Structure formats: C-alpha cells, structure tokens
Amino acid sequence: MILYPEAGIIQKFIAKEGDTVTQGTKVAVISKSSPGDTCCLIR
Image (cartoon, rainbow, N blue to C red; front, top):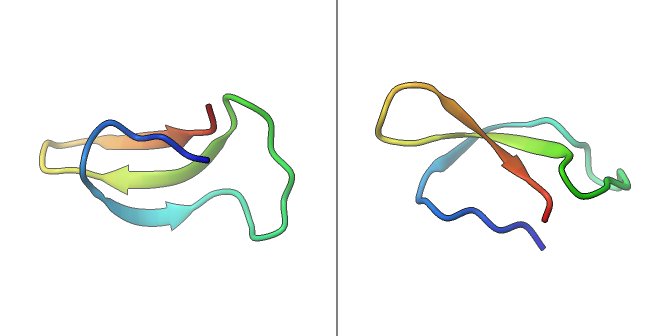
C-alpha cells in the first residue's frame, strides 16, 4: 500500500512493475499545485 496525504498527479514512476521495494523506497514523483516535486514513499 502506498499512502500519500495530498492530491497530485503521478509524473514519473521510479520503481518498475514487479519490483520488490522496502519501506522508505521512492516509487514515484508526484506533482502537486505548489512548485517542486514530492516523492511518494512506501510506508
């Protein structure tokens, strides 16, 4: 499960489908209304 507390649009997936990732791994870049990118983390 990926938790993200804000709305946004996925701009880029960092992890590929089928990858096994651990907690804290960046899996995607999400753009939101304010400037700058936020990375989505596995929790």
